[in-house]
Length: 49
Image (cartoon, rainbow, N blue to C red; front, side, top):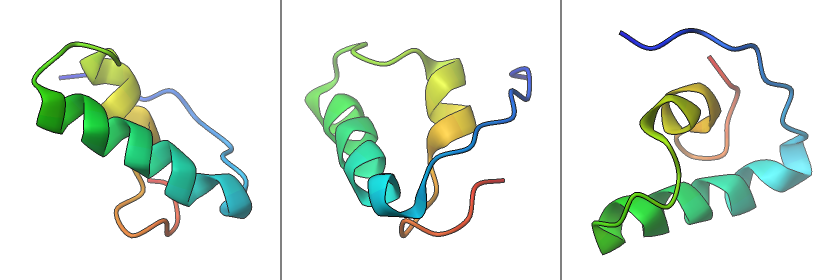
């Protein structure tokens, strides 16, 4: 289980953050720590959890 780290990602930055996360996952490289992915991914650039 990952620690929940409250993030405030501006709405206009969410799509960009998601693209970077998906690129990291698709490339198979650990470009972004798993905990950061857990805390930052917003699905379809929606609201953070």
